Structure formats: C-alpha cells, structure tokens
Amino acid sequence: MLPPVGPSGGPREPMHIGTVDSFDSREPLSTVSTLGTNAGSEARVESIERLGFLPVAVDTITASIALPFDLFVRTDPRVAPVLFRERQLALEAGDFDRFGDQGISTLYIRVADHVAYRSFLLDTVLRDEGVSVGKRFRVLQVANRAVFQLAFSSRNADQLVGFAGEYGEELARLVSDESVAACELLDLMAHDYYTYTHVTNVSVLVLLIAGRMGMGASDEIVALARGAVLHDIGKRHIAPVLLNQERPLTRRQREAIQEHAKLGFLELCHRRDVSWDQLMMVYQHHERCDGQGYPVGLVADEIHPWARMCAVADVYDAMSSSRPYRPAIPLKEVWEVLEGDRGSQFDREVVKALRAVVSS
Ligand SMILES: [Fe+2]
Image (tube, rainbow, N blue to C red):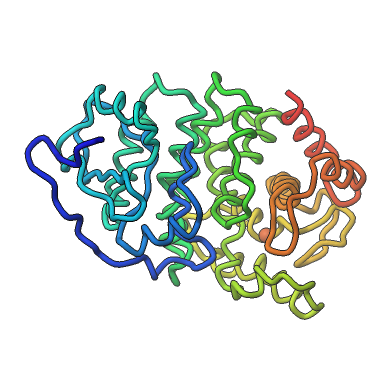
C-alpha cells in the first residue's frame, strides 16, 4: 500500500476548503478530472469536490519537477485523500512505478490549487516538445476548463476576451503543428456539449478547415482561433434552464436563444481588442447561405468567410455531440445533413474542406 507521506513529513489530514459553488452549474468543475482517465462515477467525483479536492490524472504530472501544489492520493474511496507529496517537492520515476503497480491513475489536488495546477501544466507539459501533440492538446483542454468557466460566468466580458486571446493562441499553435494529424485531434474531442467543450471543438474544427482552405498566415490563424473561442459569448445572457431544456422549445423560447448572436455582438462591438472579423464570427455564425439564418438573414457572400467556417463547425459539433434532450447523432447522418444542405444552408467550399479534414 502506498504510504501517504511526503518525503519531509508524515501523514497529514488534508484541509477541507469548501466547494466551487461559484461555477456555472451546467459545467461542474469535476469535469477537470477527465485527462485520460475515468475518475469514477459523477456522484463520486461530486463528493470529492465537496471535500475540497479535484481529481487529476497521474499522466498530467511530470517527474522530477517541483510541484506548485500539494498532491494527494486516495486508496480507499470511503475516506478522504491523504497527502502524498508536499508542494515544492517532485514526483520521481519510482512513484509512477508504484502508481502503476497499484492501478492508481488518479491523484488529487485541493480545489484552491487549480490555478497553480493549470500553470504547472502550461509551463511543463505544453512546452515540452517531447510530449505528443495529442497529449498536449488534452492537457491544454484540462488546464483551461476551470478558467473558462470562471470567465464565462463573469458579468464582465474582459475575462472571456482575455481568455480567448491566450487559449486561441495555444490552440492555433497546436493545430498548426506539422506533426499533428487532424484525425488525432478529432479522436480526442469530447462530445458532451458543455459550452467549454463546444467552444474548444468549434475552434479546432475552424482551424482545421482554415488550414485546408489555405489560410496560412500565423497571425490570421491566431485571430481566427480567438474569434472561434468567443463565438458563443452571447449565450452567457441566456438562461441555462433554456439552453438545457429537454422538452421541445416553443417558438418564443427558440427566438430567445437565437438572441445570443446579437447579444454577443452588442457586448463586443465597442471593443478595440476584438477585430471586425472576430466580431462577424460572433454575429453571423447562425446565418445561412440561403438567407434563412439569423439574426439578419444574409445570403451567401454577404456572410463573412470566417462566420461561414464557424457555421459549419458549429453545426457539425452540435449534431455529433449529445444534448440534454437527445443522444449524439451518428456521423453518417451528420454528413447527410451537411452535404444535403451544402450550398443552401452551408458554404460548399467549407463543407468540402471539413470533409477532407475528417477523411484525411
Ligand atoms: Fe451559437
């Protein structure tokens, strides 16, 4: 059995520091646990949060690097995690062997340390060229989830715009990495339709589409990624209960949700740190080439090219993800919709590019 000790001290009772009530209830912080492991049932994860801990996957920790957080282990699900390694100390190769021997794939940090954990991931794994792009992509997702949720639930758009700047740049850097295969990223995408997952998926899809369509300049790619991260910012103003409603929406409810494109535009249109191209992604990503979209009903070339890319990525991810009121739609049917409507609802060239990306 693993001794729950740090090299410099004996067993210590972990500090209980409360829960994360401030986060959007649609997106429990417990989902931070998902890096390459199954951390157990949702109920178990929630109970661990109530104790003041977050599960983190063993394979997100790099050996021999001092940890900026205390690390806990839990060998008995009936009791709270116990301290395994104190902050400022590192895990060594032997620790990983012992985790492997005992089938331990999940460790724990205090909820209060999630920012330090994020910094650790960004500064170590993400900058390590020896780590596969796939793993770096997953680490990037895990590291930013809680920050996104905080920014998304903030009244002020500053946090989300700032987040989009950093996250968009990291995503663009990873997707543009020549060693990565598009199918590798597509395989790593989650399909739970949490807002964060959706934003991440749409951003990656838009970047892959843009690459396929020949958009090469790195500053343009980064700007595109930032716009994609922001595209649904207006949903912050829509009641969660409406977004997650399981019953069919009434016409009035559907119209209320459709307001998010305009609300996002109004929130960002005065900002100097959001470009016109990015603004059009926010405003026009539900426009359709046949003029049946919203909020304006623009047709074809009237719709900004970045918004046309975003529209296809948005529908592709929305259909292939599970929703509160239906399971994920099989990809075959998703393609029937995208290709059936190609040129009416969707931009032909964009659909063609996405098809090429997915088939590559
Ligand atoms: Fe949207």
